[in-house]
Amino acid sequence: MRKTVLFVAALLLITGLFAFRGIKIVEKTAKKHAAFLIVSDVHVDTREKSSKYSGDTGMDLWHAFLQKMDEILSGPDAPSFIVYTGDLPAHYKCNGPCYLAPADRTEHNADIYAALTGLDSIANKHHKPLFYAPGNNDALAGNYYSFADEARQTPLSLIHASPYFYPKKDIDGAVPGMIANPEPTMGYYAACPEKNLRLIVLNTVIFNKAFTAADHTDPKTDGEKEMKWLAQQLEEAAAGHQQVYLAMHIPPGMDIVHSRPMWTAGAKDGSDNWQNEPREPLQIKHSSHTIWAHPYG
Image (tube, rainbow, N blue to C red; front, top):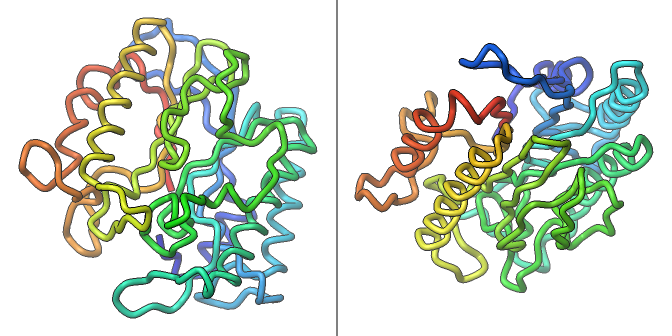
């Protein structure tokens, strides 16, 4: 999502690294979990040495951000893990479809690589699990395209991740570790950052009206599959008395700029509005007892 004012971006990057704790919603006896660090929308521009007003993150601000992140993770009350909720690279100019042909992705991929390796290096240094959620700017094929491109490659194909980077392919049952990764090219998964806590990471870009599938899949079918998987994960968490952190880039709700729902990709109920579908499991059935935090981009 577009960050239009550099001052706001600077506040987010330098002083606005958020550490969340489990927040009790209803029950007075619920257990608190350790703090975690949430980072989002860094929009790294590797071609800019200095950050400019109303621009993306140049190398000066990026290095200052990594230094600040290093300081936070070095402190006495350091967060236990990190959640990154999407949008890695700088924006690029496009009119109409924002598709990037494979031959035109050099700069875009360089920005993605710089952001991923920078975040991963800090996580690896401090032995902190880093959980990544896809943003609309992150796809190799371009803005609002599918997590996998025509060759079934994803942003994670660009890096050799450390042992602390998530998602992982192996479901090991460890703590921290992976719980489920049913569709690695779709970008959604579940992990266990610590005991009795389930982090569910969604790819919500697919639910946005601007989404286009570069990988020749069907968005409606894939969206339905992800929703069914989400419901299953919430049921399993409730049955296991686990608390849930639900991470995503694009949240449900209204886009106040364009006066339309954020999720508008064709739900099964015929409303053309995906956010009607998770309303019961997210807002009524599970939220008061299971979902403790909802970080998004």
